[in-house]
Each structure stands twice: as structure tokens, then as C-alpha cells.
Amino acid sequence: MADAVTMSPRTFFRYYASKEEVLSGLIHTIQSDGVRTLMHVASTASPHTALREVFGYLAGRYQEQRSNLYIRHQIAMQTPPMASLFLYALLETEPAICEAVCSRLEPARDRNEMRFLVAVYMAALRVSLEEWLEHEESRDLVSLLYSHLDCFSTEPKRTDE
Image (cartoon, rainbow, N blue to C red):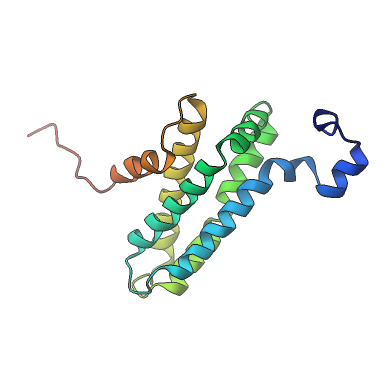
């Protein structure tokens, strides 16, 4: 990897602890910032309102970093261990988001319900990111995420009526 950026391995590892850190560092930074945004959400907000705001913020930050994220995603998808690392970098903040929601919001009392809700929002973000990165056109990631999240807010139509 050091050859790809035209620097010696010694210099490379002075800046990065590992090759994995290069791939996941951007995700860790953005995800950590997302957890901190919960401090700006009103304590009386519903969990859905708070999570929609946090995940919208995350999508906006990823959108700002599209070219950096796209390169990392392409590299990660070439080998299964790196692809797993990329996915894990997204998922590992779920407990922190859950904890922040439960401690910050008055209506968020049931931790198991919050764990499930955060996992659903994270799945929507992951699917939105994958779809967004796999297509060349620069769709709006935030709108794409919200359209996926809106699937949960509408009643499915019954076919037997």
C-alpha cells in the first residue's frame, strides 16, 4: 500500500497504525461525530426523530467524502477480509448510538427496543451507502437514506383486499 501512495513503508506506518486503519479511519471519524450529534437533539424528542437526525447527519458527512469513501470501498470490496472490516467499521458504533439515545432521550427507556431500532437505521444507512457507491451518478445520499427509512413509516398494502 505504501508503494501506491509513493512513500516508504516506514513513513506510511508513522502516519497509520495499519493498512486497515487507512480503510476504516474515515468511517470511524464520521461515525464518532454522529454519536456526538445526539447531544444536540432535544431530550424530549422521540427515538425515531433523534435517529433520523443522526443518520441524516451521517449520510451528509459521507456524501461530503464521496471520493475518499468510494476509493476505500473499491479497495475493501476486492478482498473478503477487507470487506468485512469495512462493514464492521459501520456496525461497531451501534452500541454507542444506542447508549447515547437511551441516556439522552426521555422516551427511550427500553434498551432492547433501542438496540433493534438503531440496527434498523444502521441497515438502512448501509444499504443506502452501498447503493450510492455502486452507481456512478452522484445521487443525493441523504435523500436516498430517507427514502429507505420512509419504507418503515408507511403501511404496506394488503393484496387480499
